[in-house]
Image (cartoon, rainbow, N blue to C red):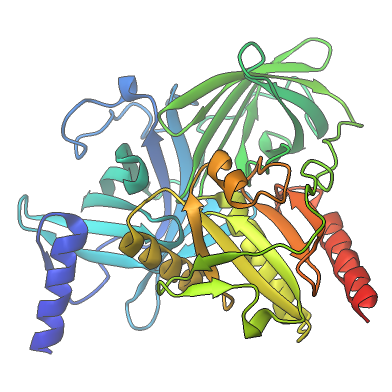
Length: 440
């Protein structure tokens, strides 16, 4: 027991960047529903001590929306062994996080919580007192933090949303982000029930995940936080079925967006965005998470079809695609198919990347090789995979036949938050069966 206690204390000192004295039980944080806030706009959070964040004006539901403050919901629960689980909620999405440390920080004698999003290599660290969490969400790969506050017993997302909606937003919308700078045409999909609103935006590179929020009069509000990305939308409804609004991603990106109702809105075919430059056999060789070089010419891949995912552990759409691939592999076991992931990461240190890939594989239950292929940018990915016209999105998926020739490419990924997800599953299965038949 003494050795285990010392080991945990040592690890806690490292994780919190300031030693804490641990508690035996995970019962300090109040169980039940919580409302979280991320202060994306630094004008709404004081500079300095992140343990003294914001103000109390919206704790009592007196404010529907505070500019630059991203609200989200989570729930705290304990099992019979007093182990804590925190579930982050975005619409119908539930993200269970169990990698949690709890203790008392010696520097200020406060109870301190650390919530680790292992697959994204981010974490929340916050002090807890009287039903209030105050701290920050840390993103090491960007060397940045965003102030955070959590309030117990609050199950709303955006407060005081009772004004009857001026418009029915259900359906598809053609939406353009950054129209005057670098226009990005997307398809918005909204689901509205009274003042409740959910949905997402689909683009050629992926989707914005499960967005959750409200409609209030002629205004709409949506947000999402999954431990990897933080999205905040607001919009104003205009005549003729139009919307204009602003979008924030983290604290470093803000732009405007416009949308028009369009039931026929579509995106370019994801199977045609990236073409194959070289129809001959290709060669791939990169180190795995243990630093060992792995080649598609090795015995485990020989005479097999190879499903190859171009991804990054930092990428939420890649996480959705990884979930799809691991589930597909389990449901369709076939010795003639091998799976492989090529990771492009934000770090250059091999030890750090190897640990990231191991953590990702463990958290995501990936039981096929994840290789470190390079830095997290499309230019380097394109250079490392010269047989493709370009890599324009993470993820990109391609399939090699038994002779290592590219026979299929799919750019981006529309995940379970979109209407395209089910059709992709069908198309992918049909494509795999087609290639298997060709092989036979």
